Length: 114
Length: 109
Image (cartoon, rainbow over all chains, first blue to last red; front, side, top):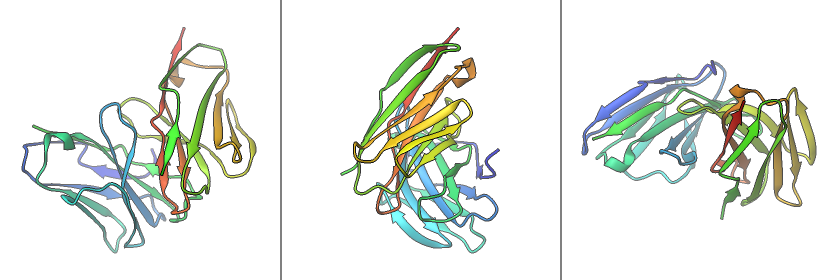
């Protein structure tokens, strides 16, 4: 158990809809990262937050947004969903935001868009 | 640009040794991580290299050569449970973790 909690585990929704994925980092970790992993694809970096502030952005679509709250949990919002958004979405946390401490991943949310 | 290459698939026999290579070209280098990922599960941290040389951790070792943009993960005394994908991730100057495509390892009895 990594200590990173993601909810829900599974989401099935229709095209055009909006969903929110939630992540609670490990106790003491200030940095939260979001990754997308499509079938047989690598981990694609979406966005990083550090202590409530956006730190870095990857290939995140404009339809997607995220935030980190004062209690350090984070939410990833996906809107106007398309079939191609079906993927595993992972949240990871680390102690700092400087890349010299490992990422600890949650078990992911599997999103299916029908 | 960012480019990380790993072999797509490898097969080895239980009890053997296997080496999984990773080559990278990234905008700067601030460290390299190896992760193990079983199908449909979360990646789990295996090892970290920031200086050249070999880091040993039980059955797993990882090597780094910064001048060559090259790392490998060495798995000894292979077990069936080692069947998984192995991901190489480079931390660039922006402190971003850039993941490679992963190598799917199958361990056969």
